[in-house]
Length: 489
Ligand SMILES: *[C@@H]1O[C@H](CO)[C@@H](O)[C@H](O)[C@H]1NC(C)=O
Ligand SMILES: *[C@@H]1O[C@H](CO)[C@@H](O)[C@H](O)[C@H]1NC(C)=O
Ligand SMILES: *[C@@H]1O[C@H](CO)[C@@H](O)[C@H](O)[C@H]1NC(C)=O
Ligand SMILES: *[C@@H]1O[C@H](CO)[C@@H](O)[C@H](O)[C@H]1NC(C)=O
Ligand SMILES: *[C@@H]1O[C@H](CO)[C@@H](O)[C@H](O)[C@H]1NC(C)=O
Image 1 (spheres, rainbow, N blue to C red):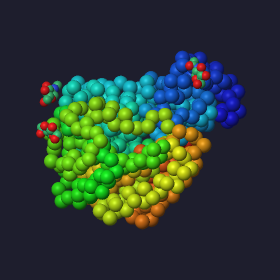
Image 2 (image 1 turned 180 degrees about the vertical axis):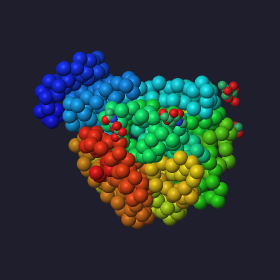
Image 3 (image 1 turned 60 degrees about the horizontal axis):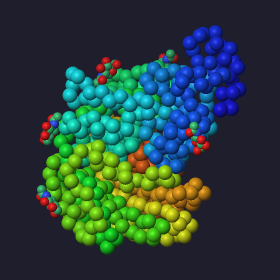
Image 4 (image 1 turned 90 degrees about the vertical axis):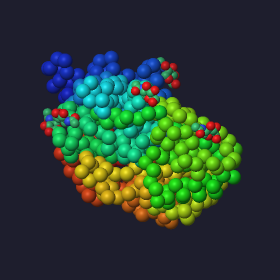
């Protein structure tokens, strides 16, 4: 904020000549009635609505625009008044501190941009404000037997989810969430509003699909609304006696010659430090209204089970259930790798994770440590609109690779460094044992000390840097909006 105060006089003199424009001597005037300071109800509610404590920094101001025009006004003011520390949030589900919240800066809270609008002309299209939560979209579409490639967790915001790639219940069939975007309304760094799609600003369109917050603020997504009836899914929990059977079932699924695009499965192993106990859970879905689908039998047959919620239901219900498993209001770190499939790897990585837990729990008594295996979605086919994630269109990561997620939760910020160090060492050991250091890292699962954008490959990074120079020549999204994975320019 220092630079802001230094320039405010000059700005104020200039701008006061033009009525109706915000004045730089008072951030509150940027959007009258929609700027909030600490110790107000709106501010408190906004901060406590960040899912993890690690996202709950203390901005000096929270600005809450409700339209793209208001977001544009905010960005013009950020430039005109040289405000130097800004963050943009939609759902506020990020684990990485400062990614969607600007400590002592200005946080732009997009939750007011939450319209969900079905196209009258085209039943296959739905327009969604970037601040809408995934569950709100499912609530509108489930009754119509339609769906979007949204998040599997209810309160994940559409904006962060889609610009990071996005893995949905339906991704094995339809690809990454970002590949279902037909058009985006984007506020550029200078406050200009553009429509980015395959024919209008196509390079920006592609860059935003995986490039996170490096190019502009997406205020609206026009997404494919896929026909989708209710489907079978839920969660099955097992005690640790089932670990070997679990790992073997996962290997069988991944190594089967048959690729079933209706299977969505997250296999999670859980260590509860407070109780020093292990267990596992499968969140699994078969995206057709088929109870007891044979494709999931290798998992549903595993015994013993401690709970089982498999049923036919809709995306809203499932996303609400999965959110219930997440440890709200804890400090959290996610870290990720993608690894070539092999039965040996699956077993050994699980072992390495288990071996790392005793040391950590000795230092952080309340640690919850989890590791998850799941699949990577297929990349877009050659003649489809491409994304930035760097997969060749003939690549088959959905078959060849396993996406590994480590996620850790703890209650006290004083333990954050210890946990991050432990997770980073474990991630490094796994990568050295089984990974290729350049292989894909899913941005929405990456720790702040990882570099998912570099994992998209040199060609993709070069293009992203050029697009940044074209659309944000002064580097607002590199320097001022400093949270998130940056391009290093
Ligand atoms: C906001 O939160 C602070 C810190 O928890 C609390 O002291 C204050 O009373 C709250 N103010 C309002 C208006 O809710
Ligand atoms: C959705 O699908 C169910 C089950 O097939 C059917 O009963 C219902 O009428 C459908 N709803 C709409 C709006 O098409
Ligand atoms: C792409 O943007 C142009 C310019 O705004 C618009 O006319 C066109 O309808 C958009 N295409 C799609 C698929 O939204
Ligand atoms: C599915 O399996 C459960 C548990 O074995 C059983 O109770 C249920 O009747 C089965 N449903 C169908 C449609 O086969
Ligand atoms: C805003 O930025 C875009 C992209 O760099 C540029 O094309 C446009 O001319 C700029 N508009 C103004 C008013 O400066």
